[in-house]
Length: 225
Image 1: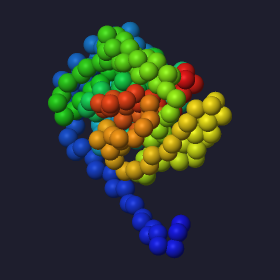
Image 2: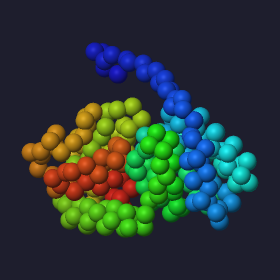
Image 3: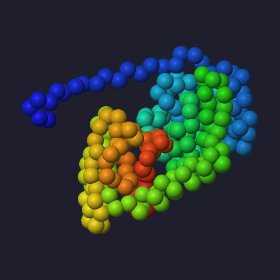
């Protein structure tokens, strides 16, 4: 830290969703698990109590269920530990970003149980193929770049500055140019005007889903360029 730096301590306080999953919704879920013997339950932190409620319900209905742990930000490591132990994942939460990552990375079916909207959905094959086409298009465009901008977030748990410097060295050793851009808010408007051909994202995986003027790929996709 520099002489003028200020150390800031961060306290994380979990806030739980207090309502229970309706029995009717859990009974509806059973229809998706007819041929499934063992499922993995993952969730965002506010639905942790719902996860234990669902586990008890499934076991009462002769279904094995493993609590795989919470998904924090873009980190799905907790679920990945149980990849070989379960046939299908149940994600308790809303939206499709986290379940899409699970489906894309692990290849297992993912059911989305949303206690708030009281709905059950799943990531369809068509959605996966559409997202994959967009992904490969970004990679193809980025592979033609001669100058890369490496995006680094200053936010807690998203900062990968060391990996950014490793990427920079790797790119430059291949005869191309690379510059590091660091900030709290990574979006297209903050990156306009810089003379780079493509960006490499080292922060939240969701960033490259936003609309950018230039191709944005994630760290794991640099092996293709």
